[in-house]
Length: 181
Ligand code: XMP
Ligand code: MG
Image (cartoon, rainbow, N blue to C red; front, side, top):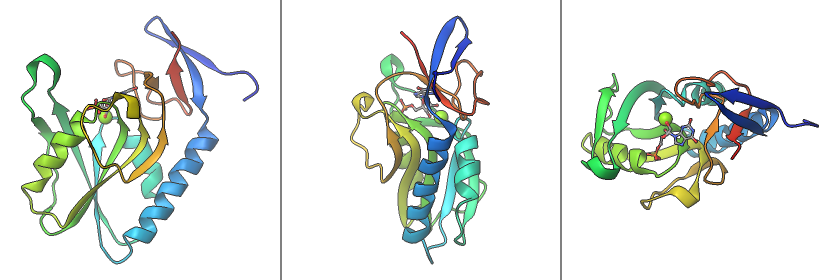
């Protein structure tokens, strides 16, 4: 992109920061690693809605090993009202016990959601739990979390596009855009 594309949403400007072609390469690299690591392990991919739906659609079409796919919707409470738990708004519709689980997340920010969701999954006695996320903001993490498959580390800025939204908008954008201060 010679000149960075700008989009405006809800009175804020967002500047293209990761182009679609780069995203495509990041997704392919992640899929290559997972295809190698999970060959013969028949994993269950757990898509965390809503933000991960576009990333998951692209990633999973690059996966060529035997696997199952399910979706969940979770809400985590932290900050002042911290319960240390996630509320499961939509549960997985498949038996997770004695299986290798791969959580598909769009972005890891404070890492609280993932931390609590991984805890929740342990009750099903899975063989393993790993996470694949397209983006991670290491400077924003508040809990220690083992992120095996990260597409790209980004600064602690708000981003939209490629499934990520600002108040429900911007998910359909092809590139990832960073909020301009
Ligand atoms: P935590 O803080 O628990 O949050 O890791 C993860 C969830 O928060 C959302 N999130 C974002 N959504 N742009 C977004 O559109 C962002 O920059 C951003 N940072 C966090 C996202 O839903 C993620 O799953
Ligand atoms: Mg999300």
